Each structure stands twice: as C-alpha cells, then as structure tokens.
Image 1 (cartoon, one colour):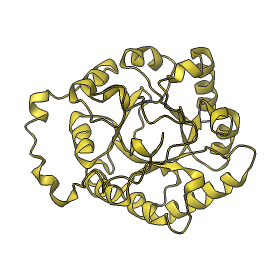
Image 2 (tube, helix red, strand yellow):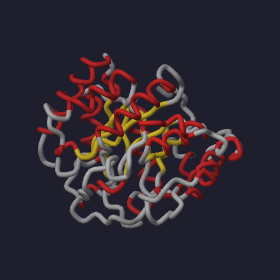
Image 3 (cartoon, rainbow, N blue to C red):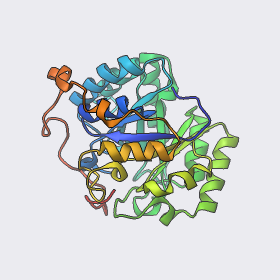
Image 4 (spheres, one colour):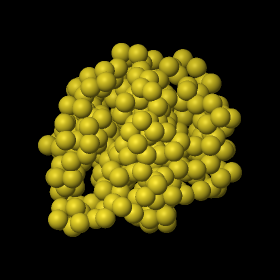
Length: 289
C-alpha cells in the first residue's frame, strides 16, 4: 500500500483495459468501478477477478495501490458477496463501502466488522476495508462525518474516502467549504486515519486542494473524454494533466499507445459483461463527473 504523506492521485477505471492504461501511466492508486451502478458502482465479479489477477500481480508489495468500489454497504450480503472479498483480499486489493441509508443505526458497524473479519481470514490485513463519508449525507440518509471517523477508529479502519453521493455536477467544495474540509482532514490525521477526497473535482482544483492535506485526490469524470459523463472512456491526455498537476512524472503518450493490448486476451469483458444493471441511489443523476 501507499505510505507517502504527499498527496497522490486515485483514478477509477471501468474496464481492465482502462486499469492497464492507468497503471502504465503511473497512477498511484487504480480503482475499479462501474459508474452506471451509482456513485460507488460495484463492478461485476468477472471484472474484479480480472483486476485481481492483473493488478494484484503488478501492484502487490509495491508503492502502488488498487481497489474496487464496493457500492453501498446495505446492499452487501455477507454470504453471497464473500466471493468478491475472496478474489481481491489475497492480492492486496481494497474495497470501499458507501454508507447511504445507514444513518441513525449502529447495525452498519456490525456488518463492517464481519466483512473485515472475512478480509482478515483471506489476507490477514483488515486495512483493506475503506469507509466512505458522503459530504451530501442528508440527501442519502448517511452518517455524519464525526460518526464515520469515530467508527473507523473503533473498528480499526485506517482510510476514509470523502465523496459525493449525488452526481448532479456539484463538486465536493460546493457542498463542503475548504475551511470545513481542512478541519475534517486535520481531525482524521490526529486519529491516524488517512483520507482521500473525491466528488466532481476539476483538474484545475488539484493543486489547491492538495494544500489542505488529503492523502489522495480521487478522479473519474475529470479525466473522461466527456467530462460531463463519468461513464465515458478515460482520456490518457487528461490523466497526464492530472498527474502533472499533482507533480507526478508521467510516461509519454507515444509510449502508452505502443502497448500491445492483445495480451489482455480472455481477461477483457464485453461492456454488458462488466457491469450490473444500473442501480442509482434515490435522487442520483446518471450524468455528471
């Protein structure tokens, strides 16, 4: 896992080919998600298996991370969905859980503990679980920041993602002002919890937000060919711009496009195979970065 204290980038891919591209461009944290399934759209089991084999082999024990978006915690079945954890946990993959519809109850903490136990049985590393705090939590009945942070400490989770639940074009800083965001990051740091921030963050805001002290900045829509549609394909040129904004070195695009993607072979899933039917949250738009 990454252990640098400098702000790094987390960029989400929605296919194995995109994940390979992000890896080769030098993105520190490659995430796998299906944007059409919601803000943390869980990818298909088939795509998770492909990612675990390809990314797990190349990022295991390195200073680079990979993860999957786990969707909403309320949708996880402890028995049926263990197969996802069985694939990613042994290969150092992380999983992010959203907390929509979890406010006002502590049942979700019990469920996270059980999922972490399943991860620990596979890999011995509970830190592969990540909680997501929705900045717009009232819109999806999710817990407030202090509750999520306290829960992370109590159940020994050392990473939190702050994101937006409703993808309507509003950016993270439209919902949380920078002063409040900086205080949240500071409170997490005081409890040894590393924080990633995401939520329609424009490339032009990367440098400024980095000064607030997040460990990672997450992107998807801002590096897509259509920046208003986060389900569109990734633009290598925009990824390079993002890496440059975060002061990370990139490979020339001429090198990237010389890659032979034929070695993907049977690992490449067709669009219909690599996603579930879209299941957006109540009030969520399918468009927007």
